[in-house]
Image 1: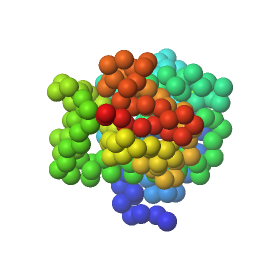
Image 2: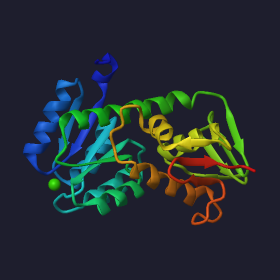
Image 3: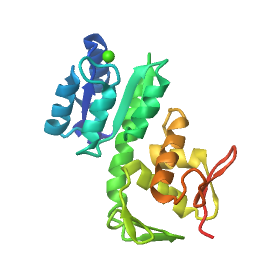
Length: 236
Ligand code: CA
């Protein structure tokens, strides 16, 4: 089903293989997206700024600058959802991309259906964050305070900066304080119900979140792993 609001969403594709860029552009245009392309990292960074896209599809292997570098440069000034695109055997690049603030990744070759679903999930998720931030509510647990109204997180009174996905993940965990949050629930709430991606994405985001809120991230006491099932926010 096609929601009319999605017709206004702008997608920026940063990809040097023009045949691939054109076929992705065509598939997304059929779905009603306003699609722009950039063939180099430099052009990608510039268009990400000028066009204010709803989402960026970013190839890792680009001439001149790497997609990872482009991801870092876009992230320096924008929280736009970024999906990294790479060759199947470049898993290390994907993890590095997630650590630099990308929201998701796909590996080549991918089906257009899968790509469209992921694009929709990321856009839906980022527009929902905007709605959630209007709610006037503060969640508290242990040393952590999450202010939904101001979209601020404090650890022992000190503000810490979280990426949108990290914020959403922390919110999902804190809403189930001292209860198991299964991997399935967290992925659905943070990445959307039609998320097809690798569950490694969740683990990388948990790792990043721990690095920001745990006194000793390698021995977490607040966001603990429930082996084989998921995670739990513990405040006692
Ligand atoms: Ca390429």
